[in-house]
Image (cartoon, rainbow, N blue to C red; front, side, top):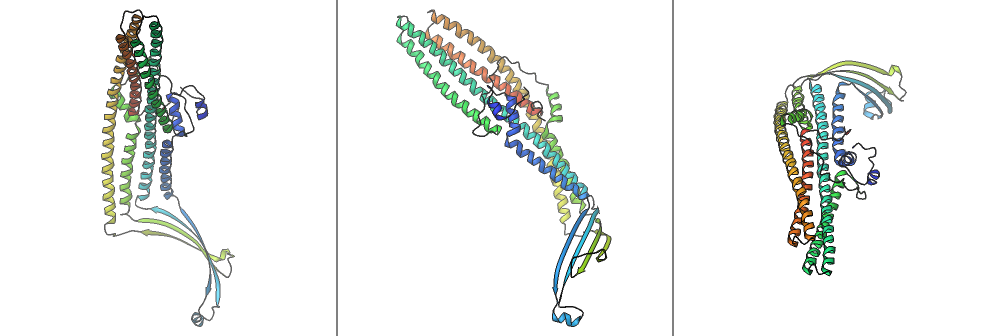
Length: 428
């Protein structure tokens, strides 16, 4: 469902909340999304810093001083007054011509770091959406359990009213009336517990969405037991999709490339650096009113080469090489975990689909059986124990069917998460 209104007041005015709406609110309001977005921005800023090394540097300085000469110095140089003022101004431009590839390696490392941060943001977003889906289905299940408990209480109330009439006519016993009274109280007690579970689930969902304590959400949409299960892909196809779309895999590869670039940074220190520079400097006595005649220029080049540093460079290269091996091993571990997670998600989803089919069939049979037993009980053809058993079987079957339906829904969410495809429409 594509929404035209995502503001919290607009959502609050609706009768029910859909999963797609919950996802969109989370993307707009959740602190988790803001945190990972800020981390990605920091990584991009580091890449811009590294890119600045290709630009020239321009520095300006200015100074002013009052010189008070000593008597001894004036005796040596009688031309000196007792004191004078001296002002200076300078402009220096420098440009790094070559630094052994360090500049290039730093830029590569920062660029791959920014790429890894962007994929990390996308992976965190998938986690957020999966967690919202889990919280949403939990709230749905709590709401359905509350409805089932209330329906059970209503059923027991109907039987209680009927048996009171029959008791007054001498067709039912006090024990029959007490049976339904006890079961009504039990159902009402279950409803109280289900209401508490529902409120707790809604509070957890609101916190996950990033809403304030004063904000209230409409209840989640009712569960549609007739909604058909979406077909799951074959493992090979799903894995190919994961290799293309799963952010954590691309993040791990970017981290490997960043670690490889870090070796170039360390090795660059073995080579000389060559810089060009130009100075425009001036000195003036007595006042800062500089004129063109006060300035002189210097243009030159500089080469610097560290010939021996006690093994510091070698140690940094070895450290960078070790970090690369760690990143490569980490990437392989991430790959294996992603495959295992996908295979497990596919298996769990298939089991959830089958469980939903079985519980759905059980629910239909239990409802038919309860209705037949209730009709027979009213006609005096079935005993109270049989009716109690039929109602209990139906209530349990309905609760299991709801749980199976939402387990299948969560299984689909987990499967999409494992494939890297869990995003609401237009969320990119």
